[in-house]
Structure formats: C-alpha cells, structure tokens
Length: 445
Ligand code: GDP
Image (cartoon, rainbow, N blue to C red; front, side, top):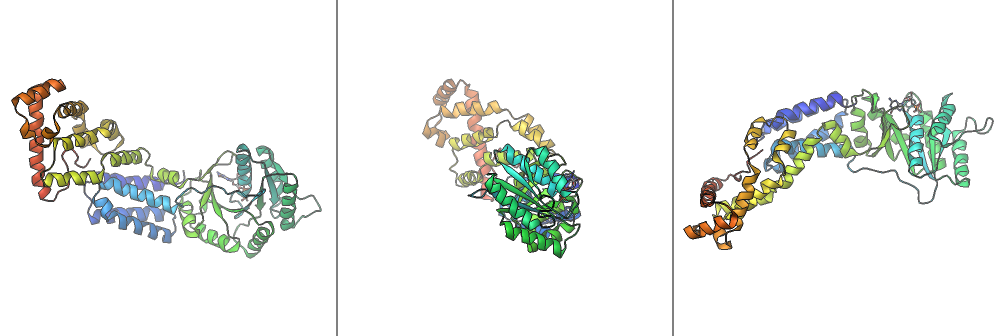
C-alpha cells in the first residue's frame, strides 16, 4: 500500500533508536540521515525533506530530548509532530457558503480521479443531509458527461449536463446555467467537474480559470493522483498558479504509490489536504486527518499511546523538584509515597511494556515489580503523623508498633520501609549533588 516502504524504513530507524538510553549528537545525526533517505526514496520533494529533517534535527538535539525520561521515544514524538505539520497541521473541513448553494469546483489532470471524486463527494454530502447537484463541465473527454451521469446515478444525486445543442463546447456557460438551476431548485451544493489534460497546458488552465471566474466557487479542490510521484510538486504549482485552489484531494491512496506526492503538496502549496480517496468505489473516500495519516505512516499506534501515558505519569517538573529535595535533604516520606503513587499512575505497567518492542531486559525487572508493594507502603506511611513523615527519626519502638497495628502490617515491615527510605535518601543525596537528576524507581524505562 501507499507508504508501505516508507513506514517500514522509519520503523526500522526507530527500532534501532529504541534500544538506546541517552542519545548522542551522532545518534541523532544518524537517525536524521536515515529519515532523510527514506523520505527521498519515497519521492518526497527535496525542499520538503530538507525543511522537515532540519526541524527534526534541531529539536532532537535540544532540551526536550535531553531532559526526556526516554529520549528515543521523544524523538519519535518529534518526528510525528513534524509530520503532522508537513501534512497541514490541523484538520481542515470543507467550507460551506453562508448563502446556498455552496459551489465546489474540481480541478486536476485527466485521470486524477475528478469524476469519481464528484460521485464520492456527492454521496458523502447526501449522507450528511445535504442536497448536492453534479455538473458536467468536462466537455473535452468524449465520455466524461456519461461517466458523471453514471456516478450520479450510483450516488443517487441529480446531474446537470448540457442539452445537445445548448452549451455544448462551452463549459463556462454550462457551469453558470447549472448554478442558476441549482438556485431555482434549491440544491444546497453544486459540484462542478471540469476537464483535465494528460499534462498541464495553457488552454486547460485558461478554461479552468474562466470557469472559476464565472462561478465564483466557495471551494476549488485540486485532485491529485498519489501515484504521480516526483511530478506532483510541479503539477500542483502549475494548478496553483493557473486556477489557484483552496484545498487538495489526494486520490488513489490505496495504490502502491510511494507517497511522496501526499507528503509534498500541502507543504509546497500551503493548501490543506481536505479529502483522501482510497479506491474506485464511491465509499472509498474520507475526510483527511493530518494526525491520523502521520500515525499511519509512522506505524506507531500503540507506541504513541504508550509515550503519552508515560509522559503523564512521569511529570518532569515533579521529577526535578524531587531531585532538588534530595540535594537539599528535604525529601520526606510523603515525597517517597508520591513517587510510588506516580509509578502506580502508569496503570498496568507490565501491559504497557508489552506494547514496547525491544524492552526485553526491562520487562524482566517489571515482572518482579509488585504493585501491591505500593499499597503496603501507602498504608504504613498514612498511619504516621505529619511530623514523622518529615523526620522518621521520631519513630521510636512504641510508635512503630502502633503504626504497624494501624496499617495492618508488622513492625518488621515498618522497619524495612524506614530503612529503605533512609538508604534511598542518603544515596540520592550523594547522587543529586553530583548533578544527576534521576529519582529512584524512576530510571529510564
Ligand atoms: P478524471 O479524469 O480526473 O475525471 O478521473 P476519473 O475519475 O475518470 O478516474 C480515472 C481512473 O482512476 C478511473 O478508472 C477511476 O476508477 C480510477 N480512480 C479514481 N479514484 C481512485 C482511487 O482513489 N483509487 C483507485 N484505485 N482508483 C481510482
């Protein structure tokens, strides 16, 4: 499928990264180089590749990765975010006119998939409660009018076509008449199919420009075949200069295209991708979501969810505050409890680790991690007074016995906890003074 090879190569790149802890500048450079090659091989335009890899590199070498608890995942996150940007950022929906009918004009090369799209769009709009009308203003291709009538019938929508002898050969007149007709019969959307050529030519552009002027469309959708590869950028720029368009439709995303067109057009034209076409059937069509497409390309799925959960659980500011407390010897049993609770926030840690390939060694450690331990610790600490939590030295024999009774534990459990806390605090104080920001139990996953 489209992006298949690109996805595989990016996954390989990330798989290598994931096994690393801290990332050196040369790790980052190596990764960026691999991403660059993968994008170029996928036919993404050079300018787009340069801009993309430049941003990824800059961010990957910066603080957000350096300070991240898992630098490798942070890099994946950055690549994902920049990919969403390249694809247009926010989702852009179709815009409707305040006063109907909304006029949508389709433009693009012959064979791009305009006529098919007209049917898909009409069906989709109809399902959404609109009353669309299709207009056959492609009078170049011998079969175009009939083809539009066929898709119109399939979609169950009205098709406006020139009567023989009236308007034949004059697509501008056909389009204008169609809009009057739509107003009169109260259709709320008019989709104008226009002629395409096999290549960009001046006459084609002039005709499309004339139709545009005549019908003053609310949206001009440029339909581009994802399979056209390197030509995508030149074609898109020619149409932008000739007709200008308000949005892009990527067609044939179901094919074996390498995907470069898809990754380049939004970025080089500054126009959003509004729809994606994924097959010959009228239902093979969907609004375009930059974020979903990026995840699909990166093949992340579970991994992104995992990153989010880990980031929520391990609040970095919190981690820094705790490190400071260690350094200044103000870390209390309450803080200790807070740390353990953060660990529990990660939910079923074992299940999450299962989603991460290449975390073998860590998985073993987690197998030994007992979540009930947190509950026991919590019970003990909560049976202590505020003063005791700040200064465990206040805990004499009789207090320890009461705490054990109060929490349903033994005195040995209480003693072990206090010892562990004191050792951890002592160790971390030394480490923290040496400038290492990590917290026990919170080492990199
Ligand atoms: P037009 O010349 O721009 O109007 O293009 P058409 O709508 O006639 O489409 C050209 C060919 O591409 C037809 O055979 C369509 O069935 C096919 N086609 C259109 N959209 C898609 C798509 O998303 N996926 C696939 N696989 N084929 C498509």
